[in-house]
Image (cartoon, rainbow, N blue to C red):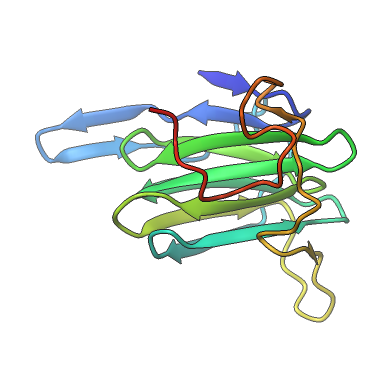
Length: 171
């Protein structure tokens, strides 16, 4: 199942888990998922992040697309369009895996939100250029990140405020 989000190009593909008495098997990414992955994937990266750590914000200016897959723990993955002041927030976990597509022109990042570290693999359609990296960064707590819309909702109490990665979840 594919879920589309309010920022153009951001999608999530639910991963099919095939359990048996040994554990489970799942396909994390397939080239023939052309309706979800139109770009050719060239590199896979691994991120291990301790609980409560934020890795944000950055964007890519030369066409990189990222595909995030949380394997263990849980992460709040966000993308922000500063022109529209619109933010997408996706909670991903190892217990319900999904592949999340984020076009790199959006500022994006994540926070490890479980009581255990987050282990994530992410795939990209461009190789990392050590001499000339395709990254533009702002601080994780940058005061200009003020969403007026979160996941298409303008009534979210976090709208109109500086984005707070540590805002307590809804009860």
